[in-house]
Amino acid sequence: MSKFISTNRKDFFVNLLRKTVRLDIASAFVSDCDLWKEILKSSNDEDLEVRLIAGVDGAISDPRVIGAKNPKIAVKVHNKVDGGIFHPKLYIFYTKNGDIEVLLGSANFTDGGFLHNDEILLHIKEEPRVIKQCIIYFEECWDPYYSREITPEELVTYTQKYKDRKKQSQSTEKVPEVLTEVRKKVLEDLKTVPADGSFLEYCSLLYQAVELKYTWLVDPENETLSSRVTEDRLFILLDTLEECHGLLTQFNKSYTPKDVHKIFGSSNPYAFLGNSSRSFLNTEFQEDTELAKRLRSLLVEFSKKRFQKNLTAKVETVHEILDSITPPKIGVAWGSRLLAIARPDLAISYNSASRDLLDKIVGCKSAKGNKEKKKSNYLRILQWLWKQDWYKNKPKELSPIQERIWNNRAALIDVLVYDLHLAESEKGPELKKLEGKILKFFGCQLF
Image 1: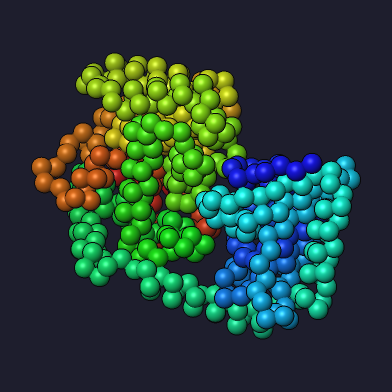
Image 2 (image 1 turned 45 degrees about the vertical axis):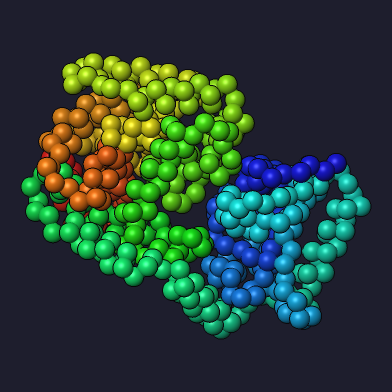
């Protein structure tokens, strides 16, 4: 029995992985992707053993994977013995109940292969003849003649080649020089704002936070984003937020898998405002179910709504929409992400990475595990936000980027509160100094 798979490839892989005790992978290109992290977790938490063969032609596979040291994971690189390049994409799952299932297709073991690109996979099950041929092929590839463990010395040399290739790729795709200089000037202006509690200081803190904490935005495995210069990170966030807003509120067609992954933050840079690769909402939106249609309709209405200045009436309206988009299976984290995307000028995302600090800043008691208490805290936080001078008082003259920040100012709070709950040992002196500035800006001293 075979099944053709072109969408939800990552979810399908993870579901297979959960019932697997041994996994064999042969891939032309491997990266430190979400699935690799799932495998590392499963090898630590469960009885999972893995064999992986990676191609190294063109120094394109990630050295963090091919040099991995784990007692349950064996990694080899392909020996170039016949002049061609190693180009298979084969995944063999040995399940807990004794079955063997295979994924075979065009998807490399990367986020591109299983999330972003247009790829196909064939799921092969209960076809012993074909499965046996796949196993024989893998075992031949695993033979020492065709593959080997990379030595520490080879790994050092390969890692440098990998870095050089990345630099070369970036140098050929840089932002035009004139545009780069304009952006640098705009961003430089953000650094020189006095600490006066104004919206302009808020812009400055956003720039500093992005520079220190959002290095993950420029993902080395994302060929498009890796070409962006460091100073572009704030632009990337704004582009991302505005793109998701358009998808959610101005898009009348059915969503592609890529659209859905963007809206729900399944990958960088869309993981901003919270993320999950396996939310049931991903499937609902992709299949355009009645639930998805209802949620989209409510969020479009919310995006266009005019609000009264009266705070009580305003919070009652948000409470109503929040109740409407968070039925039993949808939590406040997902509901607030969607609200923040629909109205980034008005709503914020309230999730596990931001919730604790937001609660403390506003003085809310922890609501872990209590959905109704989380809603109550969220609405109280919004009321606090709407009263802040920097939120209410728009300066008369703003640069183009400051104008964009103003239009997204509520949602962008996530930049400032994200990861401030890290252990002290994980924070460098610059981040600790920035924390103090942020907490002072919000009128709060926690540490």
